[in-house]
Length: 360
Image 1 (tube, rainbow, N blue to C red):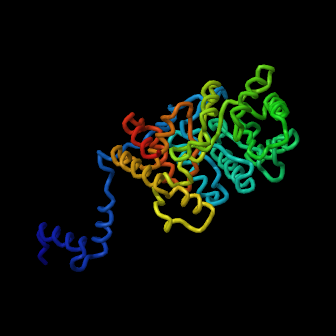
Image 2: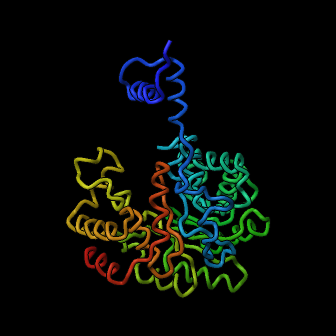
Image 3: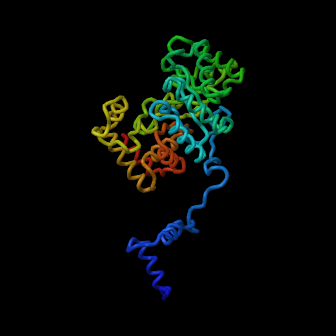
């Protein structure tokens, strides 16, 4: 019996590997083994140790904590995002250096706080996380009266599986009866009890912030942070008086709605793309000439910088004075990857002027 020459054996193997002609089982096994190639020397090297963004921290006003310049909100957790997806989003945020999470006791009837608490417990991440909680609008104990405020904080602590809140945001949007002094007196007790470290403001007017600073001279706690709806298309809520007071008092501004309900992400550009819902009507409200003009300008800058349009919206906010860290809500892991890119971008004066002109 004559054995095949070496070149014939190799040619037969090649024919079988590429699907030409019959191939013995042993040869198919060898071919399968060959397809699992080792990593190329030029492949990306996995990052070892702390995330690259872990060194990027900014002080949150006078709260005594330092945060990543992008805060992850949990408003969608338990509502549009289930526990598994929410934990994946939280993991992705942490892997990129994020360390600040905000929740509300009214989000998804408390399910959002429960999901965040489960994540911190499973990952043992409480000590490395700056936890911000907004209270005042839960229908079970609404307002900022002494009794309801304490009940709100205790309920949030239980759901979050923790014994303290780093920044407690007092939401005054629906509060019309409790004097500010009484609210701050209750907050003082919460701070002395170790349940709260610092205070943030939501819905207070410029005059109320001035009143709170006057009360702080008498020993009451002061506001260290301010949450207000603010983005390139919505600048009216953060009016001149509020902006001046925040700057004069050194209050850290953590804007909510940085993407105008998702419009500034560039994913929804026409009314035919949005559903007939509350979120759809919010998106449709921005789809006017001004909104489209602004979005086109941001698209040009995004293409120039090779980043997503949503990252340009974050970079614009971080370029504003007094803004420390926007609060973003993510639906998926890829959203986190896109939004974090805005932290590492510094827009030029020409780019800022182009966006300002388009948003007029």
